[in-house]
Length: 165
Image 1 (cartoon, rainbow, N blue to C red):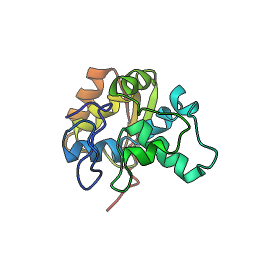
Image 2: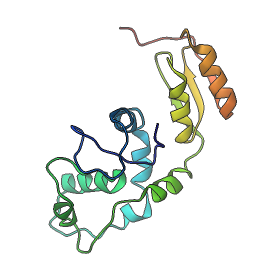
Image 3: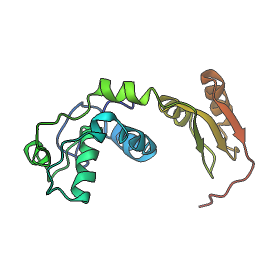
Image 4: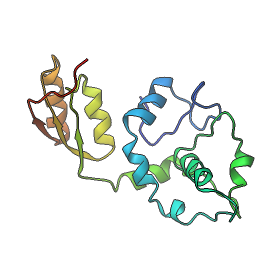
């Protein structure tokens, strides 16, 4: 599995490839770990972007997503993306993302359903999670507990499951 700071793309998510890994990594990156985008949006490069005055708010939001993720969508080329700015801008590198995200610590993660797999904790640790609350009750709870103990993550079993199929 790739590290969280390796931004990837593969069809149909996006065609512009920055780093090549698996589709699972892309989906995990974008869907399971969205909270880190809020932190990346506070990166000094994002806060000081040289916007053209004609760029609208929705376009700015999309351009910031590209800057943070390094992934262009199917309908946007690098040249089109650069048109948003008064001077050339490069997307954040994996090293930039890694160093910025490393500053994020003490994150709390909660779930209204049990955590079914150890890799949920492995991935959470990469984003600074130090506290996890979930109902417990998974057949793999021992693996979740072991992973939390190994990472020094505080795990709380709430005993309250709110998510039901």
